[in-house]
Amino acid sequence: MFIADRVVPRADRAESGTRRRVLTLISQDGPITAAQLADAVGLTAAGVRRHLDLLVEEGAVEEREHVLTGARKRGRPARAYVLTEVGHKALRGDYDELATSVLRFLRDHQGEDAVAAFARDRARDLAARIAPAVKKVGDDPEARSQALAQALQDEGYAASSRPVGKGTPLAGVQLCQGHCPVQHVAAEFPQFCEAEAEVFSELLGAHVQRLASLAHGDHVCTTFIPIQQLAQSPEKRRDPR
Image 1: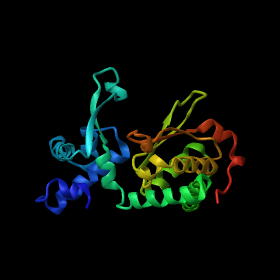
Image 2: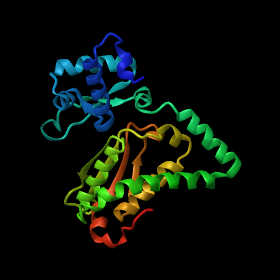
Image 3: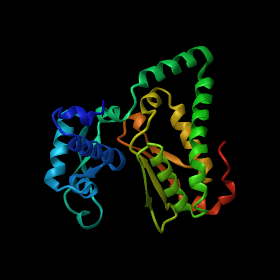
Image 4: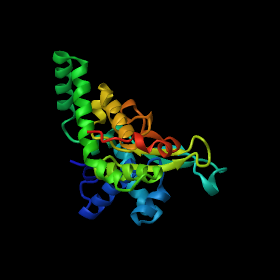
């Protein structure tokens, strides 16, 4: 059962649905402030804090200091919310332990190469599904990166993207994935993270760099996509199937 349905058993369906929406937004965009959440779900600050208090009490989210850009850049850090392991478990399926056991069996009887081959096969299946959405936007590097984020979002990865380093030689896009269906498995089998980064590179035609990972205890998977390299090397993109 989803965690938002367990926090307050007497809550009606609308309340439960709103809390689920809040949890999903924190997964997708965290660290995110209460004010930002209120804008996103159309609630007052007091209304969204009621949901946040319940999720904090349940252990699904936690507060962290987060420096905002813009007008508040020089001010005190805002309080923002990220998912905890409990929150991630609420967004995962119930088959993590079974999947891990199967992969351990595969590793023990067929070796690490067999696990890596399975991870690559799974990543290429994902790439085959999302490649059309990435290709149809043309060769604009930022547009392709945004299309990749949206395609991953449609696949349930709670993905988002934002430009970083504009106007510098290090210009790029930061791709964030607030939820990963194989997070628990990837914690023991990093081949899944490696295979995913590999197909991202093939889809975009640039060597992407994984900066943070849910599987390693970070609150979000973060991948840097070098826009300048993409712009200079469109011919390097190939179908990752």
